[in-house]
Length: 182
Picture (tube, rainbow, N blue to C red):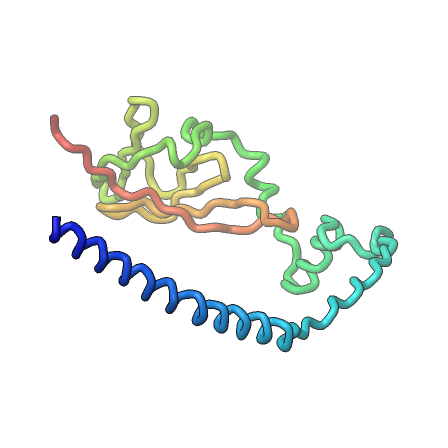
């Protein structure tokens, strides 16, 4: 019982000591915080009024159109200062078309080459058919005329229209296609 009384007395003294310490320190701290809040006022500048939006009328509708095809054609002619090559295509339109001119170049494959009477001949595969062509024959849909044949490639000259509608020459090649054996 004595033990119980001693323990109760210790607990009571501890509680009184804590109560005495906590009240006065917290009150002083709370008072200091209130004083500091009262002294410090934030200085925030006011937000400026937004600028008034004034819509503008679109006046460029009647101005120069940058993608007008006639003006582009004139500019290209002025830049190139070359005579029109329309005479280049005229003979091509009057001649009889050859069989391989019905197919685009990307549908053709050069599968071999050989020499006949000392002249090089290329073997062209189209739609599972094999054709023999020589220098001077025509290939493809762009008036392509064969200009050279080697063991590994076939060179030709195509006639196509440029952006201005003028006929120009363009080189093209068909390279030997090696097929894997299955």
